[in-house]
Structure formats: C-alpha cells, structure tokens
Length: 373
Image (cartoon, rainbow, N blue to C red):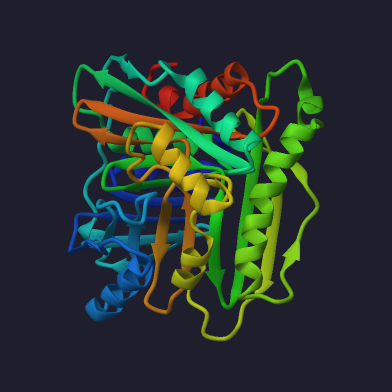
C-alpha cells in the first residue's frame, strides 16, 4: 500500500503500536496503556458525565467512543499511561516522556481472512419497509445499516489496521479506541478557543463511478444531504447565533465522493463540547428525520445492535474542548474477528440495490485495511 507523504509524521509513532489514536490532517494524539478507564454510562447526560470524570481525575485529555444508542451500554473514556500529541510536526508528551514509549514493532503481518457473515439477507425488505414509512408520512428519511463479520487466521494487529487506514484515508479522521478502529470522513464537531466546526456529509458515490458528478444532481441525493445538513444547523445555531454555513460542494475522501456542507461559528462563552455532542447526536446523516420516529424505525427494521458504529468518537480535554467524528468506515476488532457496519440514507426515490451498492463502497476502506479487498 502506498503511504501518502502527508502521513510521514506518523510513521515512527504508528510503528510503536499505539492502542489509542486520533489522526486528523497534521494533528495526532496517540496513547499507550491505560491509566484510567471510565464507563460514562447511558442516558442523555453521558457526555457531561465523561467530562466530569476527566476533570475529577486531573488528566490532560482522554480518548472517548460512545455508542450510537444513548441507552445502550458500551461507551468508553480512556486516559492512557503515555500520551503524545503531534501537531504540525511538533511533538509534545502530555503524559510520560520519550523514554516511556515502547520500541518499534516491525514486520507484523496481517493474517488471512474471509467473510463470515453478511446482513445482505432481507436488505430489500428493510428498505421497502423504510419507504413505506416515508410514504405514510411517518419519516422523511431513515438511515439503515448492514453488518458484516469477517474472520482472520490470527489475532488482528490493530496498529497495522490503523496505519493502513491513515495512509489510505489522509483527509479523514482516523481513530483507534478500545480496538474500535476506523477512518471517518465526517467531523461531528470540534471546539477550539470558542470556535465550533462541523462537516455534514450525505450522498455518496464511487470515485470510479462512470456517472461522475452527475450522480449528485438528483433530487434524491439533494434531499438526503439537505436533511442531514439542516439537522446540524438546527443543533449548532443554539450555541452560535452567527453560524456560517457553506454552499454544498463535492468532497473526496479516499476513493469515495460525498456532498458536503461545512459549518463554523463562534460559540457562546463557556460552551463545552459535551453540550454540542448532546445537541448534535444523532444527526440525520446516521439516524434520519424526524429523529425520534427514525430511531424507532431503525430499531424495528435493522435487527442488529450498532454498538459504537455511528456514535461520536474522538477526544476531549478538561476545559471542555476537543474533536469528535461520527464513527463511520470502522470496525470493532475481537481477537481474530471483526464486526463492520455501513449505512445508507433512505428517502423517497431510494432503490434497494443502489443503496446496497453504496454500503459496499463504504465497507471498502475497512475491508482493504484488513486485506480482504
């Protein structure tokens, strides 16, 4: 696999097999070991609970990954024993020193793998169920996901998966928390010095699609994206009255194109990133519109637990700042197996086979990183 030159700052640190990571452009946080592990629990206040725990423990920052369903167990906040920040090539040890870093690990192979389970069965029926609810006026949009299970012949080296994703997806947000690894194009929200930023993506197409950019010029694609972007604006404007919304553009992440809208705005003094997470999650990009009936429909139709897929993943500090992506293009590693998810937004005009093809495109980064594509 070709390594992008923009990823050169990560070569050494990734060779030391971090167990925790967040990589975005020329910024990275990396961690080894665990000094504090917190379960923030369930419910609407789980984000604030995570921040309170971090403040109580006096740590400079923590990695966090939350379940999609606020009522589902499995969210985690971790402070490592060693934490390194690399920002534009400058290295800072937030916890520990250079002597605490493990030695580089060389030549770790990826075991051979195979597809062990696929939720293809019943996909068309599920999409038709969503379309029926849309036509009945119950929802305007619902995002359905499918689940894929792969098995490998040996323990999956999470740092190898992380390094492959970081090389292949240089413009995305690459993460590793508790063997939950992925490279998401979609920034849920960041907050630094009072400035909030979010990227709303909806509508996807293969970079090699012969239809090219014309595939985005349909009412179906436009409607799907507008609903997602509107949900982000509605949530953020409460904290940033002068929020700026960019025109819709086409953004490319890896070999996948998306319709994209970027939001930026100065927030009210004292705003914490946990407040923004509570207001934003789940956006219409991963749930639907309106949110509550869309979530109920997902529960009825999907037939599987999303776990931390499509939940917020990133990092935060005691001052209430940080960065979180929506956990997409990701997988949960379990020893020799991995569980992957991919979703598609269903609106009026959606076609089951076309939506299924979209999930195949979205699964490709993780399958490639696992040596299966």
